[in-house]
Length: 493
Ligand code: NAD
View 1 (cartoon, rainbow, N blue to C red):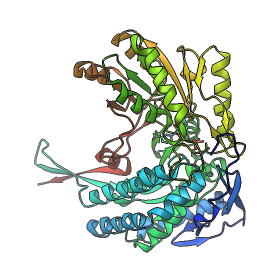
View 2: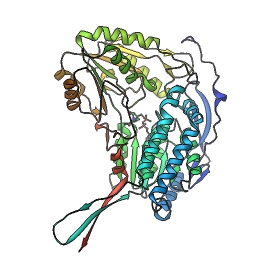
View 3: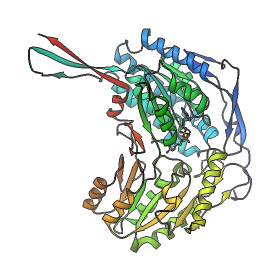
View 4: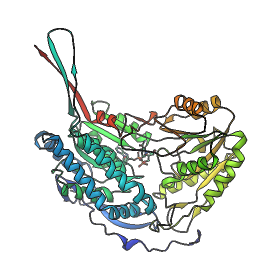
């Protein structure tokens, strides 16, 4: 397919959209207002389906259902092994519907089918399975204290959780929150991003089939300022777990300042990807490529600032650009496609604005920089060289396929430059010198550091941000802390 031709509309018939209504108290229903909103296929700009639009009244119903399920329902009272078993069944059902869910994700999000099949859906199942395994292993401690007392702790579910997620990895992000929430015995209201509600709703049907009781998982698609804000402000919600932009997190903090709602945040990044001159260049280029172009750059830990040591800078840029120019853009349903569409018009415009700013501010665009195709939100993989640290493309999270390649001389300088950002989500270092790798890992302020690899995220490994990139950790054992309260019990002997 030529990159200037319009995309053929071939993929519409490949998957049936089965569920577009709200899930409240175990039943799918229309919104109380009867309102719906359109979800759009980013590859064709056409409407996929009308989805029930939840707002404050629907959120209230969903919260009441979750409250009732928590206060008097069986979920956190049942044998923890049984809770785990039902979560495992849910994970199995997601896997059994892998192709359908992957196609729904592609339709709603515009990502290539191979990424949806290779990461999004299997990782959602793996995350649920990992946390299902924790359900019967969440326990307190006995603690020796002074005096004639016996002290122990209990770990109890925090209660009703509002889970607000973005559109970049829709089902995977839902699983990151639902895994620990459900394993610990909490009940939940999930608010998917308005751009991508479809996989969550279909997975909601599968959750009911797996035996997750009514009211434990409620799903209310809708917009941030209406449904999202209502969930955040609802007095019966004990915890908000949010993934999205730092500015939205600030709004949520302000809206909850007079409550003691538990908050956890996974936010943005401007992750440094550091390539030393002793790195295996081929591997570093392949890794750096995935670091920025996976999911069309719409990745919270995107390696958007590549720092390359001076004496390999030109060679790196040349090979990096050659690889980008060959990347296959096209119909996201075509298994040969490597690069799909950006999520929507707003994101498309924002990325094109940053590309224009990069050029204006004097960086050199060595490849890409243009829209691809006449229809759909496709942008060519774009690489800028001779980027300096103060340019907007080096400071701001673009959330698109735009790599900034910067120069550095030595390790101290690059650690300082890498940390010259308000964000601290992830970082990577490419070198064959383990001491250098460890020094960078220790010196960089980031929640995750990859050495000679990138984007390795596993349900068992904690993930989260330093600085403005977040609060708390998801995944791993640490995620359970965000969904439990510790109760200390002291008994006079
Ligand atoms: P966003 O903040 O605009 O929206 C995220 C979610 O918040 C959506 O569901 C939205 O409807 C909701 N929302 C918006 N306003 C709200 C409000 N006032 N109250 C309550 N909810 C509200 O973010 P986005 O553009 O969808 O996602 C992109 C951002 O997410 C990027 O910054 C990216 O780095 C970040 N992200 C972080 C991680 C991570 O794990 N750290 C993962 C994925 C994405």
